Length: 190
Image (tube, helix red, strand yellow):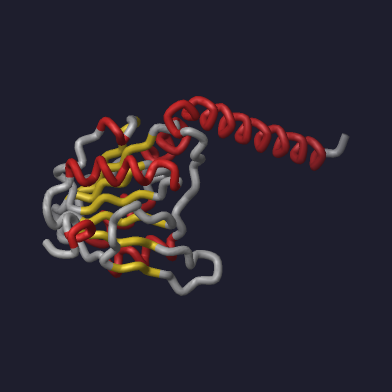
């Protein structure tokens, strides 16, 4: 058999193994995620959020369901923030840890964000499914300190009024980005 066939078969085997690892990782996290899957946030959307929500060095950004950690890395690189990501799915968690390895100021935790205290955060970001947003809104209202901002990619927080809604100028990545400031998001004033 020609060598290129062996290479092709090897490539197919590797791709199959990677898909199997992805499926097992997703299945392991199903009880906690209720079916939400790992979906990356585009660089276009991250750039739009970082331009609209300036941060200062040393401020704390917490990313709930951080996936591969790209929001953490971008915010750390652009503003020098302390960045904490929480991811329950084992595969993106490991990927985020690997990509953050050796970078000061970035911490990735494998945990449920429902058990995390969000009080110290200056900015909380999330790209979560609509079915958890109402419960998250309650958690944020109970834990955030005045002036903290929340950035939600794609889905609004029920009952909260956004300070701003971004629509990145991109045909593929133009879904809304909701920006809130606590407690103004509920009352209309700080």
